[in-house]
Length: 259
Ligand code: NAP
Image (cartoon, rainbow, N blue to C red; front, side, top):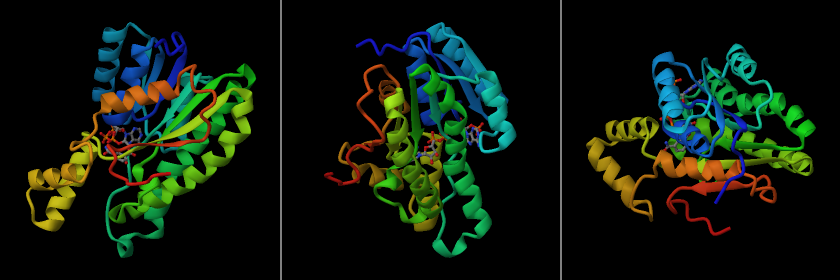
């Protein structure tokens, strides 16, 4: 299937590795030019170069913290009017309900709620003017099935989900399609860090924790950034004009939610 997005420009935030990288790769494979972003310049440049070589698209790499106003300004300066926006940032740390301070909540809300909202507000006017835009927010399975140790993430992502539910329905008639993609456990550094945290807390080995988590997923394994990226690219395609404001689970069936 031709996704109908060849030659368009996408900003893919937090994309030097993991799920963001999977989305960048899949869009590039469809002929989409990219602004890629992450904080650490070396791995970001390496990822950008690998994508240029593999797919022959233009890639601009912007090393910046997307959760800061200056970081967002640098990314937007590289591409002020993208056709496609994929929002993403690192997830908040795990912990217990009594450990989190007001500052911890503000940091999580800044990174995982207010940052994607600011990026949407900055890019949507031009999308509306053109009558075409696609936005995918990478959130989490925790939106539908909150994860106890990820209270900061649960809280911030719930706020973003509420905002998107409204705005997606306000701009759909202008050709701007916004959806959220909700990863369950995927084989990235983030998942490895959470496995290590669970191993420390339970006294099990990291391998034991991983086996138990894999067994809890009906698909019997962690997801991959490649398959996650392919779904993201489809949600950025010409074919999703009637898919509006959805929260799409990509979790191997782990959250047993029938509606
Ligand atoms: P990852 O493998 O750790 O990759 C994170 C990527 O984001 C890296 O490229 C990192 O590069 C970049 N990044 C992190 N913070 C950034 C910032 N402030 N500004 C710009 N770039 C930043 O993580 P992942 O597994 O892909 O997770 C991506 C998102 O999905 C997170 O919010 C995570 O909570 C959520 N999620 C993941 C899973 C999972 O199983 N993997 C499940 C549910 C939800 P630098 O460090 O160089 O900045």
